Length: 424
Image 1 (tube, rainbow, N blue to C red):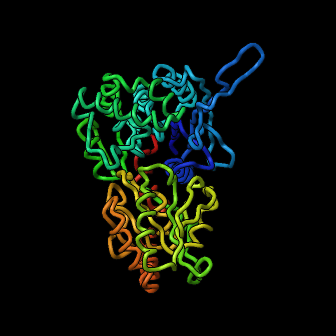
Image 2: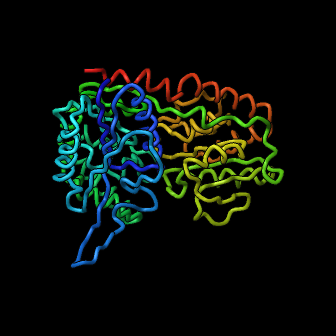
Image 3: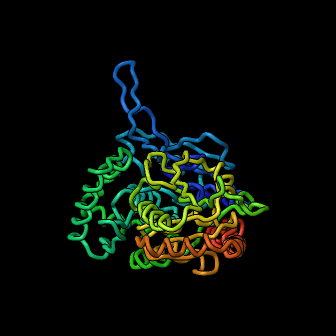
């Protein structure tokens, strides 16, 4: 039995993103045969004036709390407290290192972190850590690694191209923060000194200090490989017992087929505007469908219903009410957990042919791919499914079979994750 310390500066439960689900599902399964402990950052009061204590909103936006644990996770968790000054390039490593050394692990696995991940890896280099890249953190300095610029996927690579490209990345990132002034991301951007050319050097050093770097897809592996000792592609998974197909065909909502566009659709990179345009195209000749979005801020557009944000525990029920799921991303999604959830629920998926989404399912078998940003192409693929119930059913059955064979969390952990942490 090995002692495995999982280090995460962004962990919450219930989750507000796919990476946290990934961490938890792997941790619970590793704990069946090992002693596993999650070390997660949490934010204390940010300012004290005399006896008064002020909690600023820098530890959260609508999402992205730190260390907020409201439901049982299934493994032991130790919260490592931080404030605005200690949660920084200089402070994050020593605090985590002190807590982890006291526990004496055999292995260290650094999971979700954003700008500060390279400093964690360097502080813990004596443990020869395994590092997991979820989005494109460290590979893109915009937020948690968007690789998205001017309305499309960005091909820049500041790790290979050097200081001039890093300067362009600074301009792009600061421009983004003007329009989306997230207190969480802004604080980490400056606290990590990610705007300096030296940040690139820290990222490269941290990749080299890692025993293994885990990524979701080949394109990310290609970016990381020149700087890491070893890179392994480890796909995401889904709990096939929680997300299950409905037992009868959906009668629709108010006589209409339901097309779900899940996720944080208010973010432009998620491509919800493409789905809206495709809906407008379809409605010129038909009205037998309705699009549901979890963006509570969306207003207007006939045939589009804004529904409340669904928690992780509510998602299986939501999928059971739908007929088709659309993932219209404009940025290179590293993987796409909601795609797997929809497939496990026996639904056909129509997704952009970009990033990890291009590899999750086979076009024409479990769903359809369409050109990123092309509303006409999306509308045509949706028309094929709306017109043919038997195709929806057949693709849904194939989708379910594919995730059972390739993306069951039990198999993912057994095949890819457990071998990384042998008994001492």
